[in-house]
Image (cartoon, rainbow, N blue to C red):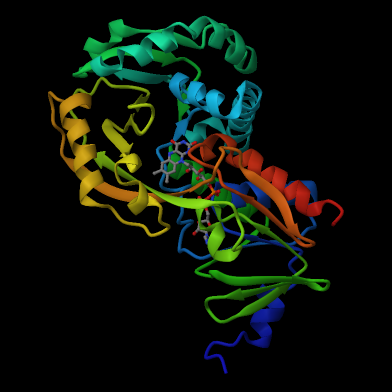
Length: 383
Ligand SMILES: Cc1cc2nc3c(=O)[nH]c(=O)nc-3n(C[C@H](O)[C@H](O)[C@H](O)COP(=O)(O)OP(=O)(O)OC[C@H]3O[C@@H](n4cnc5c(N)ncnc54)[C@H](O)[C@@H]3O)c2cc1C
């Protein structure tokens, strides 16, 4: 016998009727729930979220509103082919416009300060390869983002930023940045205002789809039956759906104490994007370094490790901000959902269950779109 059986009142008042249950209240789950309400305001939509807040990647990311720096896109083109990469860039760009419309520029604190890819003295060959392709990239990516000059070499800005060991910078003009916390707080408030019921602290342990609907067994011991389910748990998908083609990957981040006179502005990609940093409220946020401990970081457990902490602090103190050597204010980590390719998974896995997961490192850009597409799929005719 369960200690905390649902009472009749609880079951009938809070958990019925639910037309669609969304699992996970990250950017994808919230965008999906809002879209469902927009498509059909009478639809009863509930979100089951295991954390007191959404605790995965959406409240823990770096807030880059990015669609691809040159080395990353060139690597991806070599692996996935140019057409697929351009389709992905188009999706990221479209997703960013949807996010800006959904959350509102002010709420997002959206700032188009540009992105920069940095090249050290050891990366001269890579830089030359990129520089040689700028014209072509501006033609192809420019037609997606509606701007002629997307990428540009801006080495003359290096002294003003105060970097050491950096020899070249390629600026990506349309790249922007958002305030991750305010983005998520706005989405949560919007969902509540739209009548979406959000249950926090309710982790789903198992789901079983049958002709009569989906049974959701929660870790709390309650079992809830709903007609349709959208799974939006990104890096945690494997714990719910054993054959989900996703791998969790932890990413560690720090934010410094305020730095007097900080001039650095924008989003910066270092070492082919394995490290990233930006300005926020007169501080620097810096993260990444997962490649330094690949196996250890393939985990859905939160936490920080000495090897990555010291790599991030060293980068901060020797390359990014060598004159100030700022102190660390806060450390945290978040969990990404990765796969063999960078495309997200949006698919029906059984008659009444759709998944919208595996957003790689670009969920700010594509999260809204991935949630909305999942929402449309769950309302479509079933298999
Ligand atoms: C450190 C870091 C930096 C990043 N930086 C950027 C960036 O600058 N730009 C960018 O575009 N992207 C970035 N990303 C990626 C981006 O944050 C993600 O792609 C995006 O937030 C994924 O959103 P989501 O809703 O799919 O998943 P999540 O935000 O992870 O949401 C999934 C939710 O599901 C919940 N959940 C999990 N399992 C269960 C369960 N069994 N029952 C109930 N609830 C469950 C979790 O608690 C979580 O709240 C970064 C990610 C990290 C970790």
